[in-house]
Amino acid sequence: MTAREVLDVDVLVVGGGVVGAAMALALACRPAPAAVDPSGLPGLRVALLERTPPAPFDPLGEADLRVFAVNRASQRLFESLGVWPAMISRGVNPYQAMEVWDARSPGRIRFEAAEVGEPDLGHIVENRVIQWTLWEALEAAGVEQICPAGLSWLQVMPGGVDAGLDDGRTVHAALVVGADGARSRVRSLAGIGLDSTRYGQRAVVANVSTGEHNQATAWQRFLPSGPLAFLPLADGRSSIVWSTEPETAERLLALDDATFCAELGAAFEWRLGPVNATGPRASFALIGSQARHYVRPRIALVGDAAHTIHPLAGQGANLGFADVTALARVLWSRPGRDPGDLRGLRTYERMRRGDNWLMMRAMEGFSTLFGSGLPPVEMARGLGLILADRLPAIKNGFLRRALGGAVKG
Ligand SMILES: Cc1cc2nc3c(=O)[nH]c(=O)nc-3n(C[C@H](O)[C@H](O)[C@H](O)COP(=O)(O)OP(=O)(O)OC[C@H]3O[C@@H](n4cnc5c(N)ncnc54)[C@H](O)[C@@H]3O)c2cc1C
Image 1 (cartoon, rainbow, N blue to C red):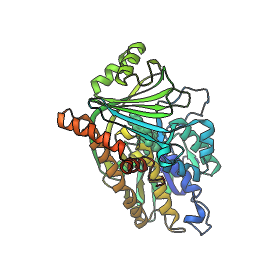
Image 2: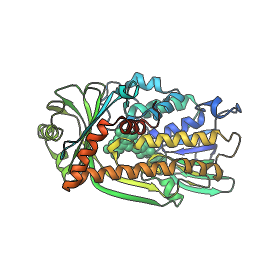
Image 3: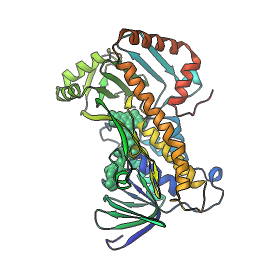
Image 4: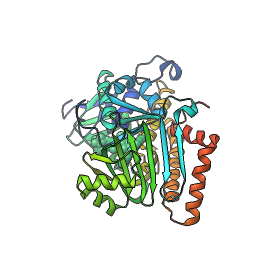
């Protein structure tokens, strides 16, 4: 495509992170043809616009600092897109248990996959494994990859939308999907407002080696300053997410490796023995946000462009993949119809916005509950965890939600 040419497609997806790449693939090759669309029409003509080319996957490369606890619903999406086997070959790590405990009360709860007849509770997968595998599949599915290039402007017209790129090219589409992350340009160009809450915390992330193997368990300890999670990597190490006050995060990043490992081990009560080594460290600001609308005529938002949540339950990317599944279902259920038609887009918004809002509020509730140092709250928290641990109905309810509503019983 030269600077003067206008590329004409059905759908332009802006942002080729894990959510945008899954979106482009889901629209280019139908995920469940017989179940959703009996028309036999070919997939939509899709283009993916991304500013930064993803690095090719290197099996010997250092594990990504961004790893996701992929739930069962997201796994099903990857299976339906035919990319799960390639992700398995690159490294997905199933975890069989999850243990959560409170630093200021005796409260503790443990979930086991076997309790609900599941082989695992999900998989820990690196961002680079998901993104690169999806990008490879995009090529085979005939998705036009416009990369590197950024979105500059949008002009919505009754019959379509023109998207201007920062290198002067133009793409004409029936629908533009904004999957361009928390600072979405599509969202701002479409004039969609954002309600956001700064949690006053940063998350420090690193991959660490411990004295003991990670036991294929996702661990989380609620400290007064925020939750500390250890997620199991395939090589026995753990990927940590330590949410804490910004000053503490800054101090933790500045520590030498040995002092950082010692502080981390103590904060984690040495559950896996001493922390022996750490890879590079980074930190992210934690912000909860929800776009005031997910759709506008010929525009739809998915993933972090539409919502961000506290990472304490590891659900951020999973919610984005649920958006992808919902929007693809809506578009496939209307074969031959204009993909930018607002009625269809509103169905997608109704399917997802309430659900995402509930998850965001639930995470904020957990964060407040576990952050409180008031003695009655501490006592109730401890008792609540102990009771929930002993009541199968409550535990299974939590598990169903964590697995993305995809568990038996
Ligand atoms: C500390 C931490 C831990 C987390 N842990 C988990 C977890 O365990 N499980 C989980 O499910 N989620 C987790 N999350 C959340 C998860 O990282 C995000 O929800 C997810 O990565 C969002 O993906 P996305 O594709 O929507 O956005 P992004 O990953 O932000 O991708 C957006 C893409 O758009 C591109 N882009 C932006 N602007 C433009 C433009 N103008 N033109 C072209 N391209 C553009 C960017 O280059 C980027 O590639 C965590 C988040 C944090 C901060």
